[in-house]
Amino acid sequence: MRRAWCILVLLAATLLPVASAYTDVQAIPLDQYCARAGQEGVNAWEKEIMTHQMTIAQSLPAPTGLAVTESVVSQPPPPPRAEMIPMAPLPSHVWVPGQWVAQGQNWVWRPGRWQ
Image (cartoon, rainbow, N blue to C red; front, side):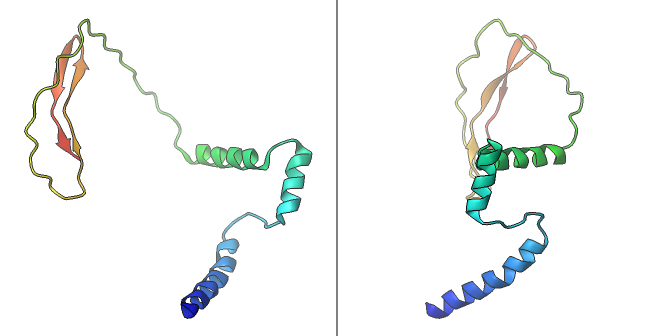
């Protein structure tokens, strides 16, 4: 147990300088960080979340012109159909049951599937 702990500490000590070399974050003491956030009138946690969200938004592709179609069906969908569930291809697959889907003015049955 003691040997595993020493190996873990050595590994962390080795990876910390490597990880910090690839980040733009400057390590400052926690009390200074909280004090600076308090002086700015912004919660430090909220500021970090906003920075993270902006980074994600900038890395996403620009939205394309997606066409939104609206289908209005005058009657409710029929009751679900009984399905025979085939054997799963892999134990990790999950059965997604079939459902009625609106297409234009009609309901179309989408059969269940393994996913």
